[in-house]
Length: 541
Image (cartoon, rainbow, N blue to C red; front, side):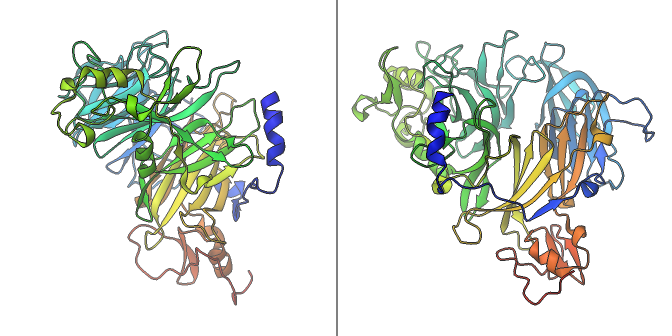
């Protein structure tokens, strides 16, 4: 608390940005009309509700799959959903924690299974089980509320989870494919220290993963939690029998810096949610939402990172602690063995080595003790694209559409809060007086108590977000319902051209005398002014 009191005066100056204000706030009487899924097969609202306990959403082949308690729900996105959201389901007797497309025919599903994690393969379309159950340890968490990630790459399953019942053994694990099964070092705090896994994706030769963990480099009276990005090589085959046997030889991680700069930086350190890679202005970019701890100054922020900058951090200096009582410092270049550790066999510094299991012991020993990089990954433009520091509620989920608008040349970001609100902003990498990184388009409260309350209780925390671009919708998941939100609330402006243009919403365009939602592949000339919202000469409504 003394630290917070010391930092706060530095940010009472004009250089601390004010919270942006939305161009539009969608009224509750509009959002309460959105269609909803509640896991109820009967249209009779008086029928007994199930405890659906939704955990995740994923869109595949024009179907929205819902991982919930005891069931997988499949929602046909081509069906009209004007009043309700209709579905088929398959019983699993689980809290579903993984829903992945394994191949064109197979859906891979894992659940907690009464603290005995279990995985299965299902036929896409029919949800009929294929083959026997698969042991879920190291692939799926034991507890339904535990954070985890999973993805398939090259037929291999990459997972980040807790691999034991006690919750001690956190692991990043590769299994099920033709490559050797590999994991992070067991209960080694320099590799992972009580991580909360957030997201993962593949890019080029690597699998990248995002998480937050207790810092080992800042140890003192208080626990410091820091956000990380890590990576492993897809062609990693593990080390030798003597060093890193059946463990990653390419595991490295770096801190993500999301902060407001001043005399002292104001950090957003709790990583909450991350997008896949999106392309903006020709750059591969990742967006992430961060918060401050609950007992500190309230704050949330969205920061953008170029993959190029992430790679620079991994190509930079390693970090080390000489002894248990010394501070962490950069490893001098002369003390890093050759070939340089942390890369992929067959490329870069390791080009002369066909496989990781023939690397010199010096290289393997070094990377086993030096997984942390010295430099942090800085955010694009050295500041958040969006921040909120005067409201106590936190932003916790994010998704982005980098091909919004008639010409598919705008990026719109949707952020979900812990109180059921959706924040929508326009993101740009270029600086200008009109945009300066982002434009706060819209805010709406999409939680519907009539449809989402269960047994008299409201759980307004947004669990997941999934875009359905083809049908112009965003699916917002809560514990006991899913709300289908239109990407653009264009019907609100009706035949008022001035309001339509002033909204500056890429999803809304003036066409044939009314404001309409711009769907992908829509034909016609839509009148918009996203950059300026110029309404000169237009009549008031």
